[in-house]
Amino acid sequence: MTELLLDGRLAATFTPGPGDSAVVLLHGFLSDRRAGGRFDRLTDEYAALGLAVLRFDFSGFGDSPGDVVDGEQLLGDARVALDFLDSRGYRKQVLHGQSLGSAVALRVAPERPRVVTLVLTGALTGAGEDRPYPFLSDEGLAAWHRGEDVHLPIEGSSVRRHVTVNRAKPRLGTTGTQEELLSALKVPVLVVHGDADDQERRLSAITAAGAHLLPEGSRVVTIPGAAHTFHDHQDALAELVTGWVRPLLTEGSR
Image (tube, helix red, strand yellow):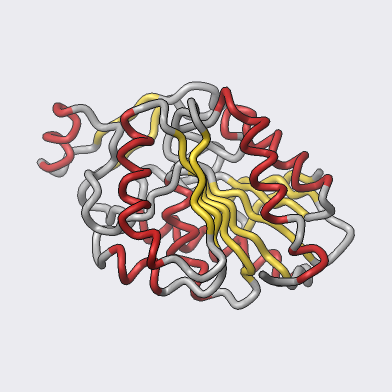
């Protein structure tokens, strides 16, 4: 396991693998490359399958630089991570995105011919219609509409006490439709939701409305009792995602 800076700026942790398969873990909002320990667990699970694992802090999160969350920059960050895997010769690449990371994965995957599947947990499979930054209170949302910086507190970071959003910076997914977003995908997708909180029930309904647009071979699964972070259902999540990815090591694609 190696700590490094991608493109000289993005704080990352890289676990090399023995073959030509690798996964990039894309964290959620108000999080970082450890995801409260959940990405530590997933790193171990994926590495046990023989995949290299790359995880990093998006710009404006964790140890990476950036003052205000910028949707276009997040997409650029994911491209930098995939460029790193390309440079290391990993021919079969998996994008695993949690929440915000799922929205990034959906938009970047169609550009990358080495991406063979997506794993999306707590997924944001809509486009354009979602409320900006669901963690905003009504007061914070009003401030955001006034163009003011809105600071959202976080815990567990050694360098940050908050994440900052501002209307002046583009929000991920402000244009396009769900049909355009999902129809652009060319590889099978595993979408995992929970049903234990309002956020997951809402996101699950959005996915259900567009499930017919997902590529052939895709799968949508609900883990009963799981909340948006899947914190208390990590065993079930690990079993699902490793079962989905394992065949890639021998088949190359589904």
